[in-house]
Amino acid sequence: MSTGELNASDFASWIRRAAELVTADADRLTRLDAAIGDGDHGHNMDRGLRAAVDSLGDGSPGKVLMAAGRAIVSKTGGASGPLYGTALRRAGKALGDADEVDAAALGTALRAALDGVRELGRAAEGDKTMVDALAPAVAAYEAALADGADLAGCVRAAAGAAERGAEATVPMQARKGRASYLGPRSTGHLDPGAASTALVLRALADVAAQGG
Ligand code: ADP
Ligand code: MG
Image 1 (cartoon, protein in one colour):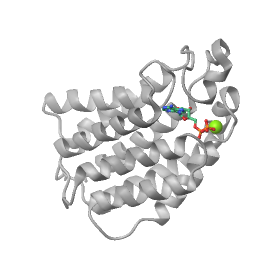
Image 2: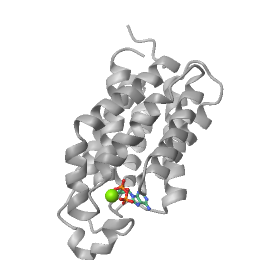
Image 3: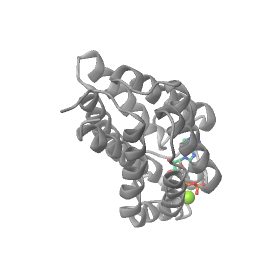
Image 4: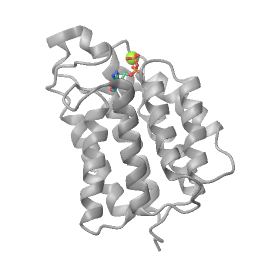
């Protein structure tokens, strides 16, 4: 039965599940990046998340996320490494020293992750980046929380919104990152970073559904 809270071992499971989903989809992420970037996104994410899995050790949920974020920054090439690393470190910092994370605390951490990505990358919604998956995911999480959903329900809402947000990048013209060099030719393709963000949030939904 769900306790409605996640502990450090659940956060470690999230990182492992994210690594699994990204490894399974690395070729697709690389193909998406080959269309509008330089074709390394699958490789970057795979390498970064493997390093994050290697970083997993003892400590609170916040420590788990901060260590994973540091590992991703140090091992992931490309624009996405610092962005994902910042997201995880900010989320970890928001969790503080708590041993159990409830739905409200997780919402605060996801909001902090989005703020960190926005500050570092300066992308707005509609610029065809990972923000187009993460921003609607955080909004959907907060809306579900306000409606009284439990933690698993909130994360499920976030993961669904991230997937729809990623799909919605197809007609957008990129205004940030490498894809922006293509100008109007960046339209008609799904943004790879938005696609990987949807996978990372799907991983969290999988872990939350198992009863964190
Ligand atoms: P690179 O573009 O350096 O090769 P990756 O291929 O790993 O790095 O990542 C590309 C993804 O990074 C893009 O699809 C986009 O989602 C994301 N991205 C790039 N620049 C920004 C930015 N300024 N803000 C948010 N996300 C960004
Ligand atoms: Mg790339």
